[in-house]
Amino acid sequence: MDVRARDLWIRLAETPAEVAASQELRFRVFCEEMDAKASREMAVVRREFDSFDEFCDHLLVFDETKGQGAEAVVGSYRLMRRPAAARRGRFYSSDEYDISVLLDHPGEIMELGRSCVDRDHRTGPVMQLLWRGIAEYVFHYDVDVMFGCASLPGVEPEQLDEPLSYLCHFHLAPPELRPRAVAERYLAMDRLAPDAFDAQDAMRRLPPLIRGYLRLGGYVGDGAVVDEDFGTTDVCVVVKTDLVTKKYYRHYARSDPDKRPDRRPDKQRAV
Image (tube, rainbow, N blue to C red; front, top):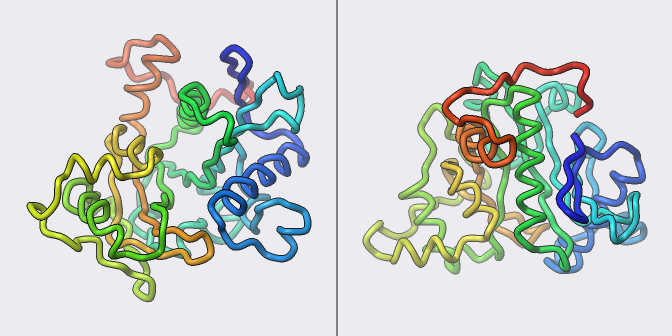
């Protein structure tokens, strides 16, 4: 994968230095801008990292006006499929959600996480490139379902009554694809009745990333989780990838969306 759009291009990280650059970007966004708690080791090296990083693929956006290597990383997404989760022992999301219904899904599944973009690059082109990269990855590995924890800012649930209720009443996943927050961290999302708030206003209050998942036809699991370390309230988002193929393959590959593309892995292509 090596896709370009003017001064930007996207591909998977190929070196430890590029993975470190994505971790530095995550530190700036999560720990400095969003006030996530950083360990002493993270603060010393100014990188946000965990034990999952070495098992994941890191999808990176580069800005060639900043250079040709790790110094040019301006966007990042962390991707984890079944084989990587098996090597690590679990998916990251399982700390917050019972994802057994997804593990039982017969096709390939993929966890998305640690999405972030440099402050000076939060424009349409960078997010479009990230979504294009995800779509290419989905095609290559024949991924059926994507999922991951997505965050709303804040740890006071009463301040999130409307967006959480909106997600619960209008975008709850079907039972066969519905993760549930683990019992000890479960926060009910049906905090208001459906007629007690303005649905359109609640939709507008959602973070752009969650709105993007919903526009793809995404769902949320049962229950939210407060993440004190990141200062957020999380929901588990689930997206069937056939919706991604129809929207993004048509735009980027100029393919007839009614004809399912050949998604068998091409072992000669580096992805």
